Amino acid sequence: MNRRVWAIAATAILGVALALVWLGAPGVGVPVLTYHHVGEGPDWLYVRPADFERQLVYLRDNGYTTISVMDLARGLSGQAQMPRRPVVITFDDGYEDNYTAAFPILLRQKMQGTFFVVTGKMGQPGYLNWRQAGEMIGGGMELGSHTVHHYTLNEINLKELERELLASRIMLENNLQGSAPIFANPFGETAPAVVDLLGRTGYQAACSSVVGLNRPGGNLYMIRRLSVPASRFGLWEFRARLWWLNLKGQLGV
Image 1 (cartoon, rainbow, N blue to C red):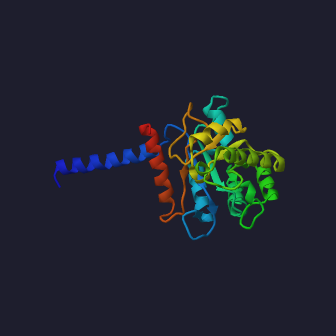
Image 2 (image 1 turned 30 degrees about the vertical axis):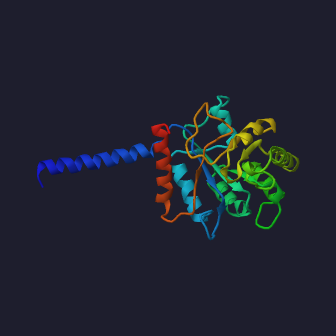
Image 3 (image 1 turned 120 degrees about the vertical axis):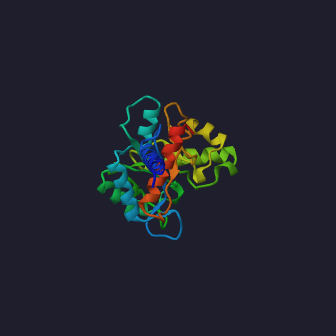
């Protein structure tokens, strides 16, 4: 192999190495990850407990510190300082395996999670009950609203939408000491009417399904998130998702 070929090969290898380092570096903003189930199940919503724990260990070993959605909102608005490399771990729907599987893993790894619950389903089979939710708050977790009935919010009228937002927050406050005035949109819907009503119904921050990192000055009622599906290719798939998210941050998109 002549010198020119060696030079081209070395340049290509160096370029790949630099790209991997660059993509592995934190992007410009804070990542918020979304989970649903932690357990064995039939579809992409179920992340196996062993995979979930490996993902948490990867985050910790790479310098990430978990914070709550309220911590994120205060940090983005300049009211509080965030750690050097923050990350938010969120769960939607309030399934029972959030308590039986995810909660013990988070405690074992000394990390924090935020759980958005459908208050009208609390205590139903397969969902959290109020006792479990209270224990999670006592263990350092954060709980917020995911509405009362999990309707598609852009398909209901304004009066019913306001009832969903307000009743869910009040139910949380009445049943859980220490619940947070935060919200996650069912199905990720981010209709303008929802954003307009959130502040009027007492919420201070809300999560969407828009993908991206979160930067100071952003809309606190449109917090961006990245879904974490069931793993097909092990930890590499999770790492690739974070690299892609950081790439978006580095490119400012």
